[in-house]
Length: 389
Image 1 (cartoon, rainbow, N blue to C red):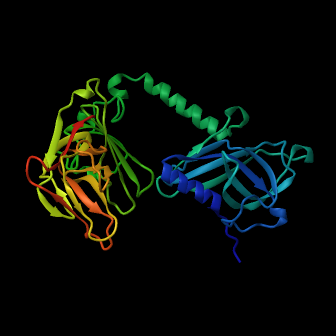
Image 2: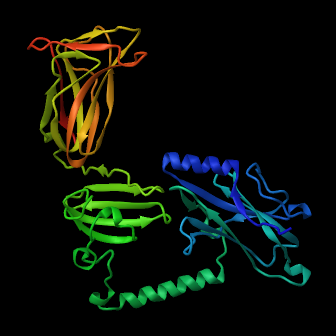
Image 3: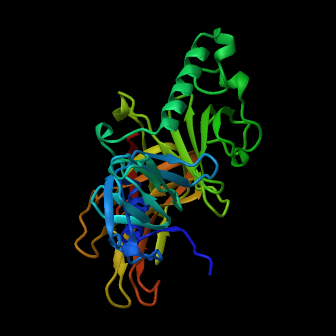
C-alpha cells in the first residue's frame, strides 16, 4: 500500500482559523516541531494535540506565500548540523499560544549530527493551505533563527535589482503602480466587476459599478476565487469590497473621511403617514452618502396589542442605493412626548432612497399587533436627524 504524506489542521487549528475569520485577524504561527513518531510513520488526524514523540521544537525561519499556488503558505525550519541523531517522521506547527494548529507526517529521513562523523544542515518545509479570507502571519524573534543560503541569495539578488532600478531615468523606472500616472498608464477598462487582475488602476464614473466619480483602485487576490478591491476617490473617501467563492461581489463598504467641520452638516426629517397597521412608514426621501444619527420623535400615537407582548422598532429601509441601518426599540407604554433613543444609518452609494419605519414586532403569529397614528398636528410620529460624517 502506498503511504500518503499530508498536513491537516488540528481541532485547535480549526478553532483558530474560525476565530480569525470572525474577528478579521491573522493566524499567527511561531514554531515548528519535528519528531520520530516512536519509530512508526504516523497518520495525521485532527484530534492530535502534540507530536507522537517530539525531538526538537524551534522558531520558524520563514513563512511565505507559495508563489505557484495562491492560498498556500510554506513554513520553513532550518535544523543546524550540530543537532540530530534521530529520525524525522512527523512535524507540527504551533501558534503564539503554544497550541498545535497543524500536524503532518514526513517521509522518513535520518538527521545525523557532527559528533557521529556526518553532519548536515536540514531544511524542513510544511505547506499550509488556508481556506476563506484568513491570512497567516509569521511571528518570530529574528535573533534566534537561521537563514537558508537560498533565502540569502534571493535577498541579495532582489537588492541588486532594486539598486539597478533606482539608477534608471525616471521615465524608464516608472511602472503601472505606485509612482505612476495611473490615468495614463493603467486606466481601468469596462465593468469593475470584471477587474480581477492584481494591480493598481485609475477608474471613473464611466466604469460600471464604480463606487464614486473617479479615483484609484487596488486589486489583490488571496486565491483564484477570493478577490478584493480597495478604491480611494478623489475626495479621499475609501471603498472596499470582496468577491466571494461563488463569484458574487459584496456591496461596496464606504469608509468616511472626517473633515474638521463635521458638525456643520444639514439635518433631515420625515413624518409617518397617518394610519393603522403592523408597520407604518414615512414617505420616501433621498439622502446622500454619509453617516446619519436619527432620532424618533413622538408627538403621540397608539399601540394595539391583539396577542400577547410586543415591542416597537424604529429603523430605515433602503428602496434604492446601498447602505445599512441600525435600529432602536421603544417602550409600549408611557412613551415620552419627545425624543426617543437614536439609531445610526450609513449610506454607501452616492445617494439612496430610504423610508423610516415604525414597526410593531414580536407577535405570534407575526403581524398581529398594530400601531395607530392620528393625522393631525397634535398626534403624529416623525424621524429627524443630522449627517455626522
